[in-house]
Image: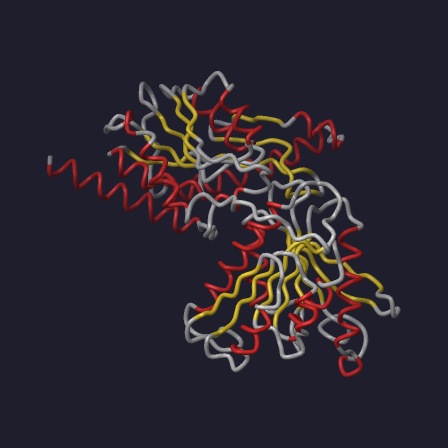
Length: 451
């Protein structure tokens, strides 16, 4: 979800910005982006990272400094001090909202110098990523910054040696990552993908670890080292780990069902290891009116609907609004079903062990709807296999009468997003889901012909 805003800075000028909000998260962590000189909030590189953060359950705020993009003022009259004021005003605006959890800042090039200067003095900033910060970055600001800080530098950037020395000045938790053969803008093949992954990994680790809901940690105290909440390298790694705990269900009569889209990448190695058939089952979130990132319920194949009564009561959603959002989700479900069933007809459910797989669980609305629907449609023994998720939600799923067994090894505390279970948490496209289904169907057909 994207949401634009404008605010008036301390000099009376209007700043333009926008939020990228993750689906299904209440009070997500927030990363504020400080762009480089002559860039803006539509920087394709910042935008790419922001979208990846949203996929990992972290909100992003992109804005234009004074005189840039759609913000008022003259760029030539805006220096480091004025940009620091702009960033502070933006953080004031974000922190005043009750919508977000802990705040991080990502700065690139000259925006890195701005981000560093502000993070050195603002205790509300809990984590920092500097991407090829410019020579304006002050080592004294680094010496004052005790929050977890990642500095990413291209190996071919002329500022490599300087910024390596800058990284050594941070007294708290910090890391210096170099990207092989990359220049200042990381335009070389594959370079920016590494930057994106490192940035998402850092914020997933440290904003999650510090999301206590209490007061901001003072900069005078070094944050303690905490274990990373990441448990798996990627979804395929999670699937291989889960398969080892599901070996009792080996055999062709077992059916592994993935909840697309992310669940397919976890389910594929499980089905392969167990010698089981692979299929998908579609369940769609029913969104809250005016808050599409929040689920008021879910609808699954077979038109099974599960409502989140607590959220409905909290938001005061009336019957008319509920019906409108449900119809919208039914339309999305039908469209997704047409796409997947054109590749893979529905597998037989009756009298089979069915392992339901997703890439993790937060509120669990879509998973719960799928479980109810699968049981209603005649599935045999239902096993739910997930890399992990919210402990509270996992307990609720384990208590569902339809669930015979729950396998979910990772319960990070505190839990804030599914993305924190992974080092790499890339979005999965519908085309990738179709390709996996097509490939698995071809492999099974080949095995039947050769048997």
